[in-house]
Image 1 (tube, rainbow, N blue to C red):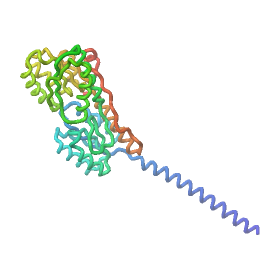
Image 2 (cartoon, rainbow, N blue to C red; image 1 turned 30 degrees about the vertical axis):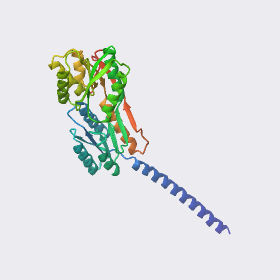
Image 3 (cartoon, rainbow, N blue to C red; image 1 turned 120 degrees about the vertical axis):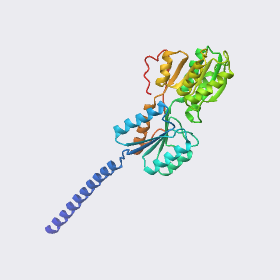
Image 4 (spheres, rainbow, N blue to C red; image 1 turned 60 degrees about the vertical axis):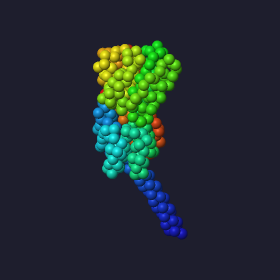
Length: 322
């Protein structure tokens, strides 16, 4: 009987130790699986509308800095304002198996098919600087509506609430829509401010120069008081056209906060204002969203990076990012 009791006791102890060992193995395995599941960024694809604009070169510089810091490969391409080219770049990123595509859309609606392809392939798309259709995971951009409001308020104050304005518009992308909406909302408070001409400068200096030449030729001295360009290259192109025509009676406002615009503000009050963006911060925010996504965390669908006003009051202290 004693022998039987001893055998039973030994069996129970053995079973208990085995159970404890099994439990410990499960916990260790669980911990190991958790570490394996914490995926690091390996490859990021960025496609921008153009690298001829210093603003988007700042995107490139910022992404390269993040890649060096985080240890991932950065693939960067310019679409050169060509929708088909940007579509092909997205397809290339899908083939290369990037972890995320950062998309600066040439056309917010037109690029929807490319976004859908990436999503179908299981690759998240984060829109940067402008929104994009097709199912992007998130959007990181400047507060473009705020930029338009700031530009409109500066213009209205300098005009003392009365005058004729030219709006040099841009491409069909959400950031431009927002800048125009914010501007028009701001000046709507002043019924004596009229938009007498609105044309597309295609977001570049040369085209805006040509557009402004035509506007000046059909609007003699005294018929235009101010010009709003929806980005700095647009405003600068229009400003240079007016300067070449010796039309110093009007002034110019833009959006970007570029070094070129700030330099013009410092040297000539005819170029009066720019709403400064922070492109480097947009890329930093996009990479943080990517890290959160890969960690399985919930993320914000939209992040707006605030803009800052730059005029002759603070241009000497302001340090442009691009």
